[in-house]
Image (cartoon, rainbow, N blue to C red; front, side, top):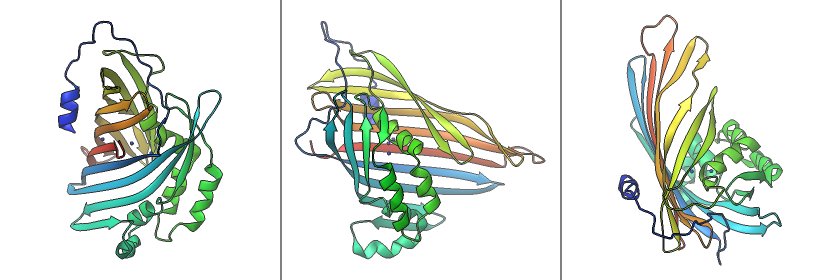
Length: 300
């Protein structure tokens, strides 16, 4: 549920804290007159080699989302409505290129593609999140209602993948990767804090280990740099061993302190993996993946 070089380079410059600067508390509030509208753009580039044969693919998925504060609880937690308003996709693999826009009636025939159909099924979905002020997701308040929507999925959609995504742990994990980024205590420029997330995949689990630094506070906004790495234990299946060779994370965030909302969050993940198999010399499979996700608030 959340990857620029120019922005990151600028934000990575060292910033000296101002003399007498007061620590600031960064907390989600969603104290806005209107629902918060944002655009999430995810670009993925992947190059694979399988038994000497090379293949590459690229994809771009743009999602328009609307987040609204429904209720502030007595303990400070927030009940949010997170609704997918529109999906655009641009796929390129094996010489085939597909562009899709969920708002265009003429693009509906493209839903014969399982990837397109699965993404299109998200349009109109509303996830109700109960979060703490630091972004920890405590509950998916309408989980049962969401699971019922799988009965109305297009027949071309990957129902198994959608159902896996609708597990409570998966939903919490997805939304926390872009929400649970704030420190638990007041911070001032130069302070750092850490966050770690588990990302499950078929047969295993990756860990995203983030280090965040408050660079500066300017015009009521906190400018934060993000860095870190990706780790994974070897996965052994049917005589093959999948290993992570390298994994790096790099990004930035801009947070509106008064309103308590993100105005920008960007994270790039670079991962290289390889697989060996009994009876075969060297690696039988390699994959290099770059995933860049950028969330930009649209209504400020």
